[in-house]
Image 1 (spheres, rainbow, N blue to C red):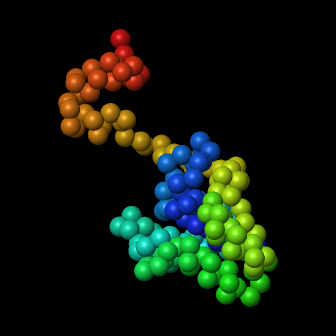
Image 2 (image 1 turned 90 degrees about the vertical axis):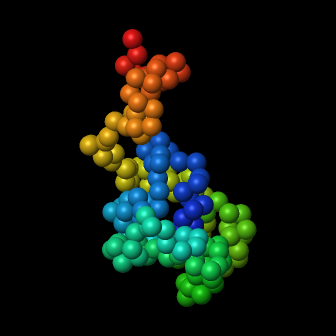
Length: 161
């Protein structure tokens, strides 16, 4: 069953903890490796590719599209209308207007949280093992002593005396 994802709608939706911090490249990589991609996945993003965006050919199972000079919503609606078997499609979005339009074509609609809950269960994000210190960006700007003092003052320093 082909999936069409409203990328930025999905990325800004409430997420399970396992997907906290999810961004466009990570979403695409996780989808590409998940069983959800078997039927084909199209991820539609608003605008043009960003410097951190994946190259659309970088993925095996995921078709990454940018809407360029129109909205992602318009691209999604057009994809559903042009599909030869819209009943086989599932569109993931929280946009009520898109949901209403695709339901008229008999395509399925799935809310973002439901999809993300399934994705988290099937393909959770594995955090990198070589994470830099949480203090690094702050230490660079304030100095280590001042950073620790502020973190301690707010009860955030895990090494507080």
